[in-house]
Length: 161
Length: 161
Image (cartoon, rainbow over all chains, first blue to last red; front, side, top):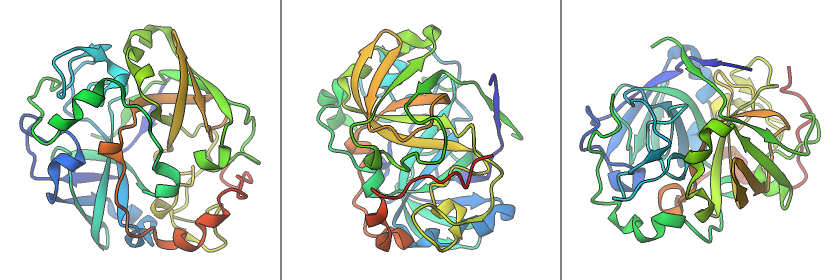
């Protein structure tokens, strides 16, 4: 299998219009709301989603530039292997965020704690289930000493095209 | 943006050769190990990943068939909206699993608790960070009454091509 083709199932509408200044993870965007527009042909697939308080958004980092295998992530001044970071420029520029679902109306999902750029193409939605997704983590590598900077750290455009 | 093209960055090698009988989430595959083969040209991007105890695997459900917007998931006898399930047949057949990382050697990652089919194309790896990814969930919808079946539930091939 050489290439895999996906098509957006919707568009993420958020207050963040450009990379610079955008929060880098959902906990750094507490309370900020957004509308997830799922294309109408998929509306039926949203049935029962409203019962879940949190969902995964899987999306395409549409403004990310070429990847490097070593990057300086927003949280650190030292370079790290790309796959040990959540940097947006990746061989496959797939983004992943867990957000709180606060309302659904037909094909629109209202969510909270969004860290995604406006107009981002949405690829998939999955229910977030602690029994599947919450792990007893015992180490977070280089982030151990850096994660306290999360609230202040912001995208500065370094991975944009 | 009409289509998005990705290319596998590696292959997931697991003991699960066919859909039927495969555990449906990592906690249902406790202790089962697998080798993630990242293609050699990406080896440098794995630097520092070994410091993380858990990682996200993002992959393509290569054996999934056509999607329906309402599906009977493995955990229930009732149909639900596709996006309120983790069923593998989706408009974009993207799979997501959190696994425990137990070793790295050059371009091979050894992981535990794998729920993925053998030969699955790998799209991305991200470090799992509780500060980003663990949520205070207050509802899990239809799964509330069904999640106790997780250990026994198995794929039965219903979503395979």
